[in-house]
Length: 496
Ligand SMILES: *Cc1c(COP(=O)(O)O)cnc(C)c1O
Image (tube, helix red, strand yellow):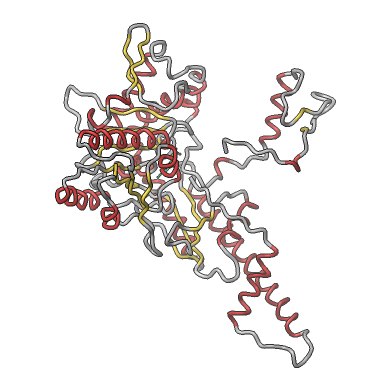
């Protein structure tokens, strides 16, 4: 969380460790210490405190890359002191960014002529990319409405209720109404028919997701394109499509090359993708690509004049590191198309092993698809004795971080666990995880049975004559209530 909160129960100072070797005095927790400490002491203190963080490799909640080759780590460390914005001083880094933009644009079938270069930019992640794409749509729509002499103060954007939180951020920060298509039980992505019904003259774009965060499913962008084309024809509007391919943008081109979701569809005007998800780079890089130059309003582009060289930029912040851009370029040339394809196929294979293992427990219903993003999302068939939140909590004991969350409206009665399969999640880890899930299930079952016995005894202990026979359902409710009291139930709602 960016905004830090001060907790009153945590005390004000950090305890000194290794007192005789390093520091004798306590360091204040929230105030800058008055004096310096030796560098090795600072290192030791921080290193030790960080031991309590989870292990990133076992963090199955995140799509974001946790492993890269040592050669790339070296390149990253070598460029850690380069500010990306100093384009004139680091022209090669700028050139590498441009190469990446063009490679991605070609991968997404942007209509680029022989002599042309692609239009796009490297960002901090898909969130910044989405802010920029959204701004471009908003500005284009406003310009058009102004030219037509029509009101331009109530822009809206149509998405599914399954959108990632950054779309809600975009809507709030940039004052655009978010019109969400509700989900339903058993269908967890945006229904293109309903989306197009929500489109009106104030809609700046429809945002489709290639790889829903909730269950990894690809939305049907082609169907959306067809329906929207028909509506545009009928109404005279020209509502465009943006594809949020944060996770799917580096999967579909390799595993489903025939799937039309990108610039092959005429209404798709911009696409974002996270370099730090299946682009296979550590956290801190995303990309946004526009179909053509005129899909990005000129007035949003800033021309930085560095020592006489014109450098057009369109980003939200000024300074940032260069390492991630260099790392992305490394992955592109190191792996090539074949390399990415192999990795994605491997991830899908591991997802399959995990899915089958989870299915074989007999306790879960799988809510992710066999295609899409390599992840397994699964719900308990019977939550009367324990819930997915209890399972998530108990898996932590083995070191696994597996989030549990409820689905958005109107499917909020469904609660799921989700395991994201990244490149570094091996088959043996998948097998291990299934075994640990099984252990947790047995323990929870055992515990629930013990509590059932206690509840039974307490019913029988009541004086004769007052005992009321409870229905099975009432009994189950009692047990769940009792059980919940024992377990501090925490919801993990913020999945990314
Ligand atoms: C992860 C994700 C985002 C946000 O991307 P960041 O790169 O983390 O900023 C947006 N949309 C979808 C579908 C995502 O999966």
